[in-house]
Image (cartoon, rainbow, N blue to C red; front, top):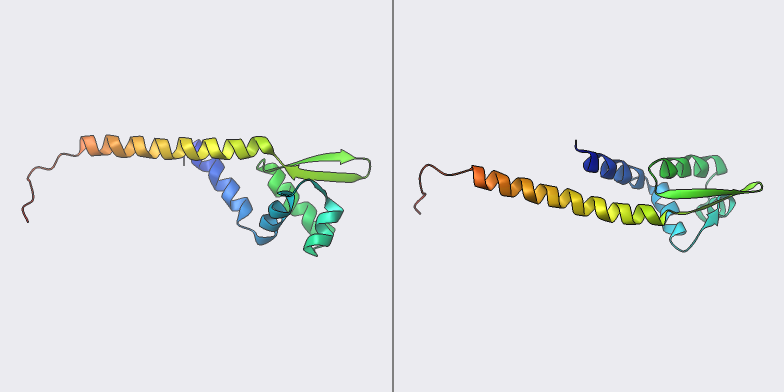
Length: 112
């Protein structure tokens, strides 16, 4: 797998989990503390923390420790990076497809 594809794979894999997707959806409206997310999603704090660590590992979420609270928010840089990854991946595929078309020359023309 190419590097861009690998990054997108990890992002989609992280978002494929229902709880992580719901966490991201909640964070779209603004940053929240882990305690807020546990109440909103009706999940255990340890489970929310685990899912946040997965999201943080792939760069989708950033956290800030404020005293005993951890405030989570969506990483705006990652949203831009995802857009750029999509563009780069699809451009690469288009280029490879064009190269493959140029290399292929049929030996005979088909008549219908």
